[in-house]
Amino acid sequence: MKGNVCKLAYVILAGLVVICVYLGWIPFFIDRVSSSGLAPADPRIAVLESQIKRGNIVDRQGTVLARSVKMVDGYAREYPLGNAAAHIVGYQSSKYGAAGIEKSMAKILLGLKEDSVSTLRDRILGHPGIGNDVSLTVDAGLQQKVTSLLAGKKGAIVVLEPSTGAVLAMASYPDYDPVKLENYMDRSDAPMLNRATLGAYPPGSVFKIVTAAAYRSSLPDRVGDTINCAGQLKITGFTLRDNGVHGRVDFREAFAKSCNVAFARYGLAVGTEEFTRQVQAFGIGKNFTFSLPIYPGSITAAGKMDGPNLASSAIGQGEVLISPLQAAVLAAAVANDGVIMQPYIVSGYSGEANGQVEIQPKEWLQAMDPLVAAAINEDMVAVVRQGTGKAAALPGITVAGKTGSAENPHGQSHAWFVGFAPAQDPRVAVAVLLENAGGGGAVAAPLAREVIRQALELSI
Image 1 (cartoon, one colour):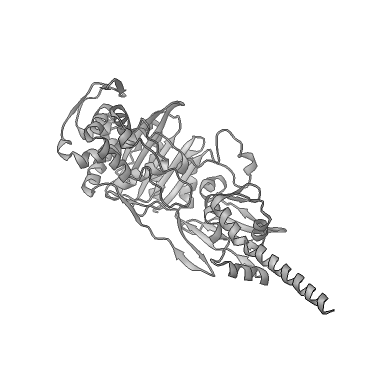
Image 2 (cartoon, rainbow, N blue to C red):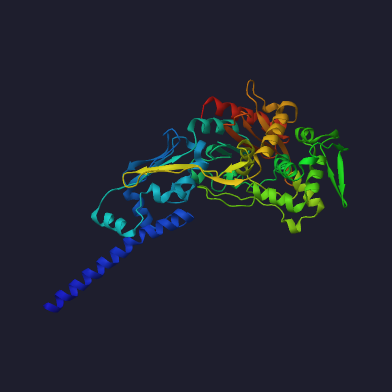
C-alpha cells in the first residue's frame, strides 16, 4: 500500500514538473517569435495568445492603430486604419506569424514579465493576461493623408521631425490589408515589402547633399570657383553624361541645376577617403536600433573605388544604394544643423505592471559642421526657388529641397525629392521616392509639396 502511494506521488510530481517546464518555456518561445516571426503555429504560442489580451498600438495623440477584440476562442486583432498603417503596425497572425510593431514589440504588447517564474506563476494561478499599450511617434491623420497621396504610385514617403528623429508618417505602396493577408503574400509587386525602410535604391542627385557636405567641409576655399559644364565628363576611359549643357556655374548654381559634371568633379577633387568618410558620417552603411527592419545602405569601399566609380557615386549613381528612410535622414541632417537624431518610431509603452515608459530622442551622428549645414540649407532653398525643385514651393513658406532622377537597369529612372520646411526653422523633413516615374522635379517634388503642406497644417 505504502509503495502504491509513493508511486502515485512520483507520477503526480513528474506531471507537475512537465507542466512547469511546458509553461516555463512559453516566454522563451515568445522571445524567439518576437525576434524572428517564425513558428506561428506553435501550440504554446497559440495558447498564450488566447489567454492574453494584447495591448493597443496607438499614435502620438492616442488614436488606436491596433486593438484586440474578444472572440469565442480568444482574441482577434483589429486595425482601424487598415492599409494606411499596415507597413508600420504590421500584423499578428496564427498562420503567417507577425510583422511590424506587432512583431518587434510582442513582449510588451503581451505584457510578459522579465522573469519566467512570474509568468509561470500567473499562468498556474489562472490570472488573466493583459498586455501593455505601445505608443508610436506617427500621427494617424498625417499617415492617412500621406498614404492617400501615394496610392497608385509604387514607392515610399517618409516624414521625420528633424529635431528629434521621430517618424511622423511613413507610407509604402503597394500596401496591404493586415486582416486579409492571404490576398497579398504571393503577389509579384511585393505589397508586403516596406519600401520605406527596406527598399534599396540608387539615390541619384539627392546624394549631392553628401557630396556638397564633403566639398564644403574639406575644400571651403574652392566653393567660389566656377566650373564649365559641356554636358559630359571623361574620366580614364569612362564618359559621364549630364542632363544638359549648363555652361559656367558656381557651386550653388551647380547644386540648384543639379549639374552632374560639376558634382562629379567635386567628388574627384575631394578624393575617395574624404568622400567615403562623409558618406559614413551621414550613417550610410551603418545599422541603428529601430523598431522595424531597415536596410543600412551601401557604397563601394574607399580602397576599391576608382575614378569613374567615385565620380558616379558623387552624383548618386554607381554602386550607391539607400532607402527612403535614409534619404529623409539626409534632409533632416541639414535641417538640424548637421546633427542626425537617431530615427525612432516607438515613443513609449504603458501598463499596470510597468507604469509609463517613455523613449527619449537621442543624437546619433554629427554629419557636418553647423556652418556647413547652414550653407547647404541655402543651397537647398535655391533648388526650390530657382532650380529643379520649383514644383515643391509653397506660398508663404520657405521650402528647402533636392531633386533626384536615379538611373536604374530595370526601366525608367526613379524619381526622388528630399527636403524640409520651413527652411529657417525646420519642423518636418521629407523623402519621396517613386519607382520608375522619371524626373524628380516633375513628379516627386509636387508630391513632396503636398506632404509638407499637410504636415505643417496639422501643426505637429
